[in-house]
Structures are given as C-alpha cells and as structure tokens.
Length: 77
Picture 1 (cartoon, rainbow, N blue to C red):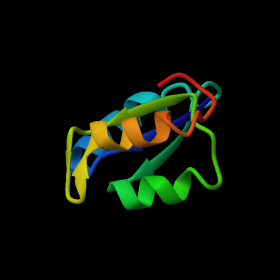
Picture 2 (cartoon, rainbow, N blue to C red):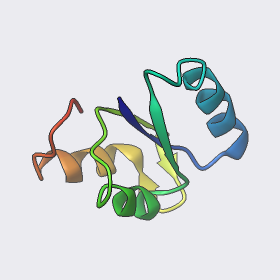
Picture 3 (cartoon, helix red, strand yellow):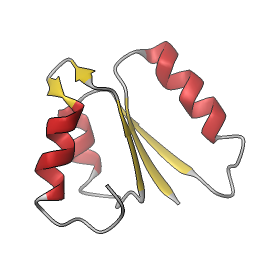
Picture 4 (tube, helix red, strand yellow):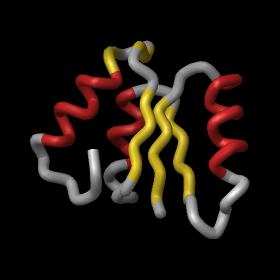
C-alpha cells in the first residue's frame, strides 16, 4: 500500500516513518518535505494513504488535499 507522508520536520517524519516501516510488507512509504515535492511524487506514485502536516513551508497540507481531490486521483483522501 503506497503511503505519501508530507512532513517538513525531519524528526516527526522519522517517527512516523519508523512506525509505518514496522510493517514493510504492508506499507511503501514515500516522504515529501513540502507541497511542491509531494506534487512531484504524485507523478510517479498513486498513494492509497496520505498523511500530511497541516502547516508546511509552502502552504497548508489541507490545500494540497483539496487540490488533488479535485483531480480525482484514485485512492482514499
């Protein structure tokens, strides 16, 4: 299951990543540090799960969700 994690704090990202990597056969985690990087990752992956920080260096995580929800990307948002 592809997971897109958007988190600009490296320590928080590492904690979440370590938790998800306890089940490597279940989760394939892709990490982005900001909305721009996350948008680029959507060109190569289709996440089934999105985990985002609310406040990112280049905007709000909720704006990223809204933008991509309107594109009707498959998966659960």
